[in-house]
Amino acid sequence: MRIAIPKEILPEEKRVAATPETIKKYIALGFTVEVEEGAGEGVLISDNDYRNAGATIATDVEKMFAAADIVLKVKQPVHNQQKNKHEVEMLRENSVLITFLHPAAPGNHAMIRNLQKKNITALTMDGIPRISRAQRMDALSSMSAVTGYKSVIMAADRLPKFIPMIGTAIGTIKPAHFLVIGIGVVGLQAIATAKRLGGVVKSLDIRKNAAIEADSLGAKPIEFDIPQELAVGNGGYAKSLDSDWLVKERRLIAGHLGDADVVILSALVPGEIAPILITREMIQAMKPGSVVIDVSVDQGGNCDATEPGIFVEKHGVHICGIQNIPGRMAVHASWLYANNLYYYVENLFKKGPGMLDFDDEIVKCSLVTHNSRIVHEGALKAMQ
Ligand code: NAD
Image (cartoon, helix red, strand yellow):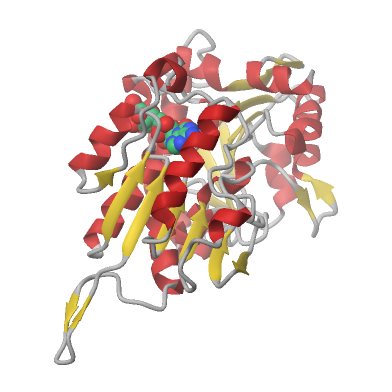
């Protein structure tokens, strides 16, 4: 079977779906691999590096798609301006596509329907269940770890202050104060990074377990006395709070904003729009020059003053709505993603080349379209 690795064409996307290391492993499994010319440019991998790993280099992306049994990508298919064709149009009928599809997002519904019409077997990397067997394939966690780290670095870059405590001949410079709200994978990595830089870190989550994890990394959890049956649902994930509890939570947060130099916002409820935890009015309580990084922007954001894709300044506070943060740290994001994808493909074809294992739980959870049907529950619910 032939695997194709196209160059990502979303603006600012530098990641790539395979590295020379994973290409060697695909070839060892019996696949042939073709990589589009320049696909690794953004992560400093040359065409020759791919050739040396055993791949062929394609100069015409349309022909590459047409000849591929499996296309591996990072982001969802989009319109290719050079070819004036959508990537879905270029896929061969009955072929396999594996990438991040975010099939429930309304902006992707038309594309998902087109995959269905073309009888593509489409599998989404954001559908992988968090079971221990799938840990090596968990691309969402990998990208969240990159995001947590980079969000703190982006904040540090904006902040006109030192992060650590610094002793000088003039006197001692106090360390910067961080408030990290939402302690999933992003929040935990943000805490670890802020601590490594020497920041003083407070954290807040509605799950009591998250407070324990934050504490173990050296953050001081803010106590929020919410009954756990209201805050935690299936699989230990957060539930969305009713408006009374959200008001209580905002009041609690407001009391801590005046101390914070940096706020990292990464509070999410699976499958739902992000809760608004900081309002425009609350921003006024913050010190001028402080920074808010709203990592939840793709799900609507945790701050209602965030604008997608840009930094805005409100009352002297810098609020960041930059999207696709992993794409800004493309080398390690690609290394992690390419390996997650390899383990996913290895599991998918564990019955042998050409034999997709549709009985496997990981495959079932990530399957979006197959046999000209949309089978992804989240997508079907969102499309109704
Ligand atoms: P997520 O991205 O769904 O949510 C981020 C965080 O936001 C969560 O901690 C959630 O509790 C929090 N949140 C939601 N509403 C909030 C509110 N109103 N106020 C404050 N915080 C709020 O989370 P995630 O990164 O997917 O991680 C969720 C859990 O899953 C964590 O316990 C994590 O350790 C666990 N996890 C397990 C595995 C694994 O077993 N392989 C992999 C990844 C994550």
